[in-house]
Image 1: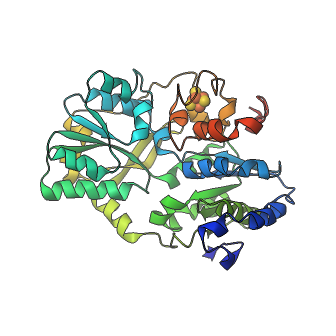
Image 2: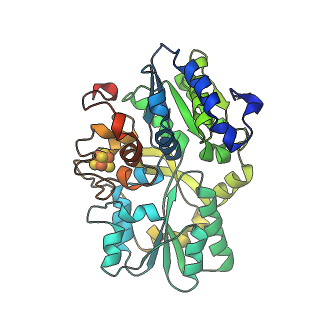
Image 3: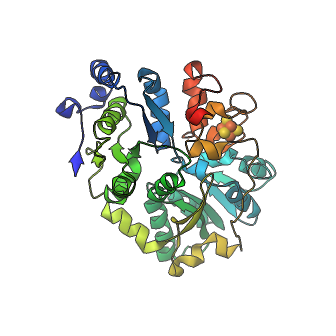
Length: 374
Ligand code: SF4
C-alpha cells in the first residue's frame, strides 16, 4: 500500500494546501507532461473544487480532467422523484438539492407549492425526529459516505419503535459504477481521482480491481488544491505501473472505517440499482435487509422504481459517464441554467453542469472541441 504526498510534511495545515508557491511548483512539473492522459474525478466535491480553484486552466492540454458519476443527486433517476411525489399521505423529508430536481411531472418544490408536505432536512436523524409526531418518509439517497448514517437512523427507528418512520432508498456503491464505466468502453479513462469521503468508509481495498482488472490507477484524494494537483502528478508518474494510492492519509486510513461498514452491513444488503446514465448495475445499490423491511417506504406504500422518463434534451447521462463535458449539451447556459435547471447536474451543488456554469464558462473550449470529439 502506498501513500502519496508530493510535498510531504510541507503540507500540514489548510493554508499549506493552498500555498501559491507550492502550487506553482507542482503546476510547473505538470506542464512538462507531454503524453495525453484523461483523468476522471469521481466525486462532485472534487468537480466543484477543480472549478473553484481554477485548476483546469492551470493544466497543459495533455492533461484532461473529466467528471464522473460522483454526485448522488445527479445519478438518482427521475422515477425516484416521481415516487416521492406519489407519497401524499406522509411528510416527505429530503436533502435540499433534491427539491428542484425535475421528475417527469415537475419537482418536489412544485409539489410543496400544491400543499404536499415536503420538508428539507440536514440529516436522516432530523427526519426521525419529525417521525415522532407524524408519518414520515425519508428520501435516502447517497453513496457510502452517507449510507452509514442512514443505516444508523433506520436501526434507531427500529430500536425505539418509531413506526411512523420509513425510508425510500436509492443508495449506491461507487466502486460498481467505476467497474461499469470501464467495462462499457464508451469513454477512455487513464486514471481516477478517487473520492476521499467515500474512501474514508471503504478504504483502499474495494478499488484494487481498477489496476488489477483494467490497468487503471486511482489516487484517494482530499479537496484542497494541492491534494488534487499532487494526485494528478501521482497518476502520471504511475501510469505504466498503475496502483491504488492514498494521498489523503490525514483523513482516510487504508482500511477505511470498519465500524461504518459494519453498520451498513447490519441494516442493508446489496441489490441491483438504477443509475441515471449508467442504467441498471447489478449489486450496485443497497436495500433494507428483511428484518428492516417494515421501514422500507417502497414496501409500505407499494412503490416500484423501475423505468425512468428523462428530459430528452438533457444529456446528464452522458455528462455523468464522462462522454461529454457540460458545455457540449445543447441546453447548457441557454435553456438550462441554475435559475431554470432542466437536469439534476445543473441543480445539485455537486453537479458538473452547475460547476461548469459557475466557475468555468469563461475559458471553456467552444462547441465541437469537447472530449471524444463531441
Ligand atoms: Fe442536463 Fe442542463 Fe446539464 Fe444539459 S446543461 S446536461 S440539460 S443539466
